[in-house]
Image (cartoon, rainbow, N blue to C red; front, side, top):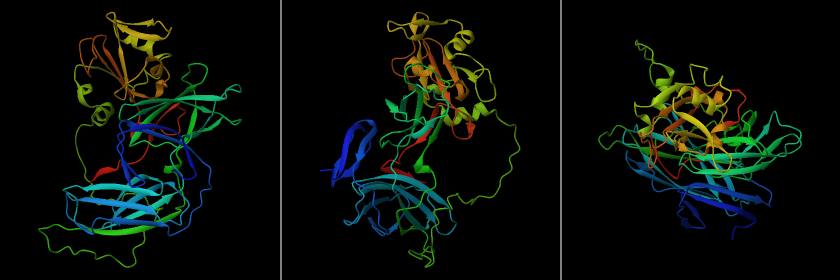
Length: 402
């Protein structure tokens, strides 16, 4: 049924795929597909085709897109990069989709505020599929495996083990997950948070497209008759190398008192009940007191009166507060204490602590809550040795374009 592909393991999430013209509705929030490819990845140009439900749209409409490979194509699994470009001003949007069994079906909902005009949908096929790949820069001679724990944005936690070769390099089987995830590496036979990992994401690196095509659409304002449909320049040419968003807004000078970096971080990263003002905030962005600590739990015990360290029945260290176990969250995902201890302290942007009785999620609060937030995006220093990363997966199959 799957041609020359052997699927070893499938773990399901809320992520829909059309597969042999049959829609699969997947029940979990993370999908990992591990498979071995026994055939060679052979590509030929002009194998891609696309079908749109129509060519002229209005803000608020849904664009139904099918992308596939001609029967002559031998490849069944690849990655489709979609670059949408506003032809008038050059603004671009980037989406990344999995091509499974040579087929993709996705929906893009046009935001009601989208600017009317003519747009180019540029599809570029990359032969690679997402996989974890990298090397342990400070690995020991005896190390032949490495642990990892993957935390999805949808709150699922997936552990795994990867073999190390003689150069301490590793590579997983192909993986599929939606949006972003956070991954933590640790030594296989002992707990350590001092690993230095060099992680490579081939999907976000430079690549040569195995095939490409461009499809044009028009978005019309029903109340504006000045915009004409399909006035597409005959010499249009999309450059995969020009991936920068072109500025279309004038510079604005704002004269105001500068906010603390931690305030901006909370605005960008803290949500729901974690945003309560009754939490104690420890800044890891503009202060180095967290990164200078020798151990996370000991640091918390010295900072917060009432928190103690105890060992559970399995001998693992846990935090206790007023005789109840303290809940620990990383980026608002509840985790086991041993995972929190594997985090490099220099990668912590902020710790937010809620006293016992303050509920930040269902069933929490009796022993207090420790919410750890990790540095990401503009808040993360590049080229710094670390054992944990934020990684980007695939775009969901139904998104709002705005």
